[in-house]
Length: 302
Ligand SMILES: Cc1cc2nc3c(=O)[nH]c(=O)nc-3n(C[C@H](O)[C@H](O)[C@H](O)COP(=O)(O)O)c2cc1C
Image (cartoon, helix red, strand yellow):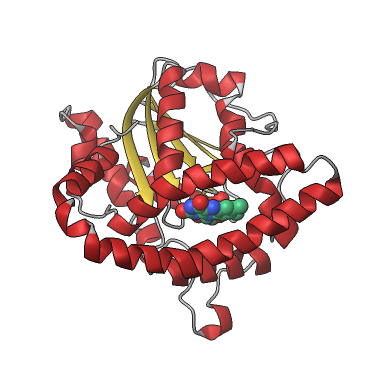
């Protein structure tokens, strides 16, 4: 089997994940072509605060960027493993870029695609968009493997900011948890690769069921709740920033408002709303919540 493993990674985290993921295919009859693509121009890392928030409107409004020319060993593959990351609850700008790239589009057409997501913990909206888009492009989306930072939401938000703005994947002040996907989960990504390999070699029925049966992917109800509400609000903000930010100075000011809004919404509003929801509403909607979660994990929620 010819397999293309293609991704963008800014820090190299997703590169590590995919390297381990593909390990079970090494020294077998399968051929693996690893491609790490780059935006043109590339996004500087670490981020400045202004550059970081400047990326929001384009992510949320599905605007891509140019992609540097990349080389592939073959014109067609039996399987494409597509790695991507969410930015602002949306596919990252390079992900939008590659989805608009003619070469990538022709490679995934009529081809099974497995997506591997390297996120903080909010990947649902990005997943829905990528899944719809690749199917629109004629690909067959057969599996989705999200790897996340499993630490509590607010702690991981602080620690990822430290990583993004400082450039080192280390504990902020030595007390916050280490940011990103844990070393353990990165190291064990090969277990997913093993499931994929077995699926193709033994012709098992439903790949996503086998992926989930490893018991390594879960989705917390608070994340489903936040993602549902927040993406709508992000869209409103993105449209306001584009419409009202008609000069660089005005855009800068609107992005600054968004920054304050985000901090306020994440650290003050969301804990209050989640607590009220957990007490007053959640006990009555547990069944719907379970069904919704299952649909998302089974790639079905469009
Ligand atoms: C601008 C920006 C926005 C991000 N927004 C999200 C997000 O909405 N949800 C999420 O789970 N992770 C988010 N992340 C984390 C990324 O998905 C990713 O895990 C991290 O940047 C490391 O990925 P890498 O392999 O590209 O270096 C964001 C990262 C950046 C740089």
